[in-house]
Image (cartoon, rainbow, N blue to C red; front, side, top):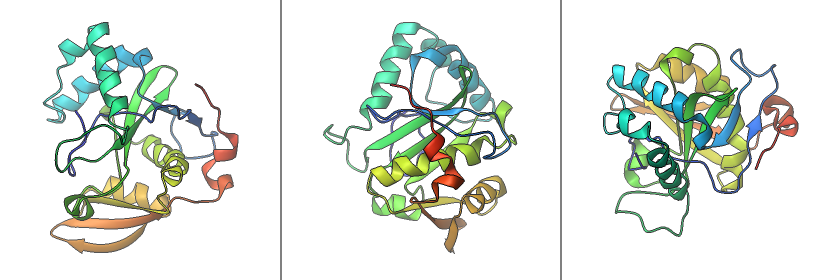
Length: 213
């Protein structure tokens, strides 16, 4: 799935951007890495997709098809390509860099950073969206992902990132507030938050990040 308006996406990491691993002190979940999409977690990603689809999410993705190594390789390529601002996109779509949260070759979640916003994304969707696979929830993964993503958002020129969630999505609200988000407003059942991307490295663990090509 590629980025459109405020739609969920399973899209890519930024070409050439390295992984960031946070120290154990940040959050309570597994000490994973925020990495661009990679073929190395194909089986785990497919298993996570089945978990999502049991909840009615990502119905347009086919786990059987993506089980094939060649199909998954092409899928990863499309995800990465979505971050390339020189690629022609359909009207209403924007370049989007998506990272996967990975711990010991297990796919745990994804986070997307949209490089710019359409009027629709300003209302719902924002710059950053994230989700965690059902079997990895309530372990601190979302907070770790979001904190690790802030330096990448800053490198894209985003001094403040806009995040949105439904008013009844208490889990996302807790994560956003825990990472320093501030509520802007509430409109039509949607909460909008602003989050500074230039945070103290001692808080994010950015200076301790382990990088991989």
